[in-house]
Image (cartoon, rainbow, N blue to C red; front, side, top):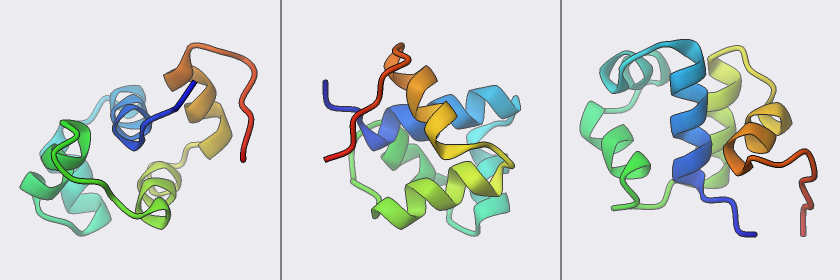
Length: 76
């Protein structure tokens, strides 16, 4: 299974109970940038995905597991 950056960012945002505008402001990007990441209209750098998740105080691997619907995450 390929876990998409959009799934990870959206899962982290939803877990935090925040809007796209709130997460964008917190991370320091424009709301439209975050919206494009979530809607698969552009691909964020890996460091941006990790930065958004960790900036929301969440564990990156936990969010990946939830986003994938699986307890098993393989990194290649």
